[in-house]
Length: 238
Image (tube, rainbow, N blue to C red; front, side):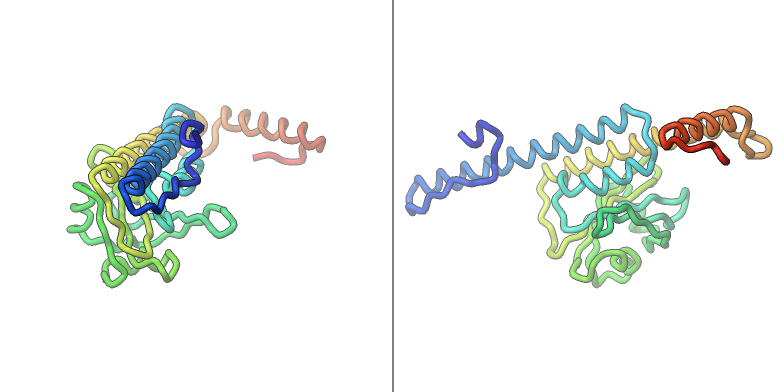
């Protein structure tokens, strides 16, 4: 009855030592898989919603940090936005207070590892010297990192970092879910970058890079709305 109501928080407890206990264990395993699939589908739907809406890159980063652990269970999550053509990038993490924090660092991956990431995910242990820069951003009890590549037209644009205290065991279904998830993130980031580029082209002079008249009017309108909401005079804007 609980399962029919989509409540998976309490497993069936049978300790008879016979086929009924085996049946209960099989039912609990099935129930756990269904529960995880539902959570994964909900998180994927959130990402799909990002793809369909005009949203800033910062909002995508926050959703990734908050939702990835529901799609691919892990102890800690990070997202590295790569600089074009480099192994350097900005690594984003959630703080203990739930705020998004980031730092710019050299990811520290060699060309062989970058090439491997273009084919599949990469697993690094705390004893791997190449992963020192990445492990330094996680808590001391993280001993294993799984790195999911986020690619756009075979270009590595981001890395999803999953931290584990113990090495994870992933089956074929887990790998397929991870790949589908990373592909969704790639589309969302590409759309956000395109929106930012269009906005910049519309609001800034292509020759000087300075804000144009449209940008001035847009900022003035936002400042007026803010002044109206706060019931304060407009002293300056921009």
